[in-house]
Image 1 (tube, rainbow, N blue to C red):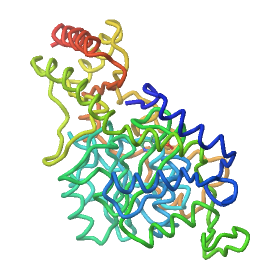
Image 2: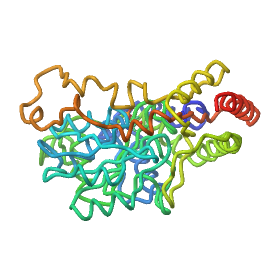
Image 3: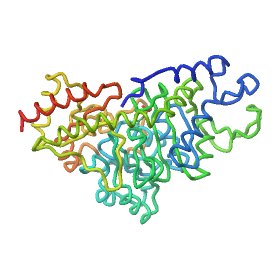
Image 4: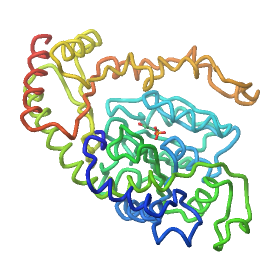
Length: 397
Ligand SMILES: *Cc1c(COP(=O)(O)O)cnc(C)c1O
């Protein structure tokens, strides 16, 4: 996955262009910038690559989620359905707006289970937010028909799946809004950065204003701009955007490498009896950033991870015990630990997560191992890994 493995001349040149002008900010300074508009350039390239009308680049993936939700008018008391297996950013983005994160079970796709989503809908539900974890997607047709039936927005968190697709559409472009992260460990990186895409002109306009203090960006005089509504600062810097311009131009090259490495591993592990791979919904194409599979039970999955690391195979994750990605370890959310007071409304409406039953998610995550696919591996290195992994698994099963 990480795009930083392959930094090269292209990245250096783009960043150097910005350093040569000295204009590190994405807005204003028109006279000094010698026509360098890296954030805008990244936005038009991203919109084109993602077959979307609009793209707006911000300071992180978490910021993209926050801005996307705000741009669609999500606020106090609205419920947003998110999966139990995701990154903490999902509920952070919801809570910061005064909205309520409603955790919902996943299935063998490792993302939102449509029938569990339907059960969780209330009068306050506004958004369903599938998170395309580890390079593959939710059953988007099923989620879309639920959203249409109940008048809900579909927001795709494609932070870990950029470059994948579903029924011919780039991941992120299928829902009403889609978000990407360009943090340091994602498939393409700006150092820090993120983006949202949409075909909705008013969400785009709202996002553009909201992420820059509510400035309306009309005219060439920033001091004369008005503020149609409150906003915050979620801007990306030109230096980070310059990295993104270079990295996005290499996305397809990176995906091809990931696919090559993924396929070598998968074809070898396919011969091992007793494991099964995560389900990819029909019509979906992964971005190949991880290879995820299930063992017969939790003990075996844990033993497999231990065996891999003893055999020198790094980068294989047992998410069931992971602090960042699975609800079991989110003690700050579960016990409502906030620095200041949470509003009474949020406290009242937030489900009591100490009492929740997510055994359906546990069934899948307990048995799962996900292995990161690196870009920098040579074919020989991948083959050696594959042989070692197959040996560990055969020993166990
Ligand atoms: C990385 C990530 C984010 C947040 O992105 P940052 O740029 O690190 O803020 C959100 N969702 C998922 C699934 C992620 O992996």
